Image 1 (cartoon, helix red, strand yellow):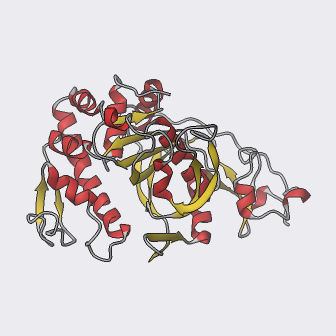
Image 2 (tube, one colour; image 1 turned 60 degrees about the vertical axis):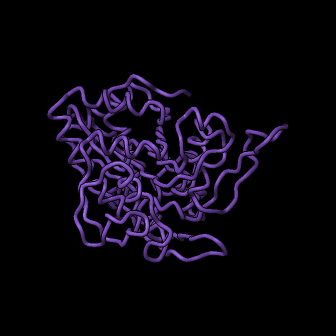
Image 3 (tube, rainbow, N blue to C red; image 1 turned 135 degrees about the horizontal axis):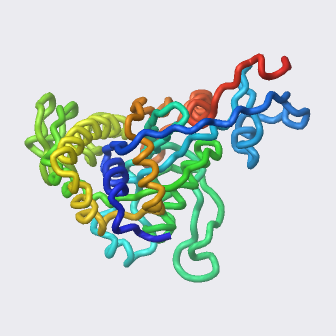
Length: 354
């Protein structure tokens, strides 16, 4: 896997989403999904939990039965994870140490080609889940997965080399949280890129809903401001000392910033078709991705005209643990969300009564 440095559509899609902004652009396309054949739930499957069926290695071929309904893995959906890394400096700095920064932002883009729609799942970095633990230091365990530990999702990126291995480990942790849902690629952007992106689109206008004056005297609660430079960093990054200190309020600011950034990016791209190339050139020292140029180009071409079905978040509860904030997703709601994002409900009459 390697960093891509010359991809126009990577610039448009990856940089926008990882900097808390998402724009799908280019030509419309939608294929025809294969229709699953009616089958009954095998005897061997009837004693399994929903989690076991969702996480099964043959989930693509086997239906899932939940709350009186049958679901089949949707064939024409793709998912890509975009990671905002809380790590100062550029990639050269990241290469000097083993271990990546925590992931401040986790956005999963799910594209449904059959319905010509796309959605974004915004994940709370404080989500408690099983995270693969990679050995540090030297010796036989260095760089190898030693097992998993129950911790905040944000720490998945701290394990690994701070580059490709950390990105892949984060993908594994998110997929595990979502019962093994397939993730087709990732892109990670270091936090120092945010002011660069922000200023290149001409600043981003937001309404300040939290009191951020402790970080920046200009970010007064209730005021509408156009963010420039470090203002943008303070707006999207501040958490401690803001409200209840949880990540929930910051995620709300992320969504507000996303909306403003998208508007600015669309306007600048309309004025200058080469603008995305300029963006990518400015970000090449801060971006790591395993998404190929051909894949990104195809997705972008397919997404033009697709409907933005909005941003989703997990239902659950945030509370202070021994030292850090912890978010516990509602398991029943999480199952329903995974089925909604990655499965299609099959008409009841297609299957025999149980």
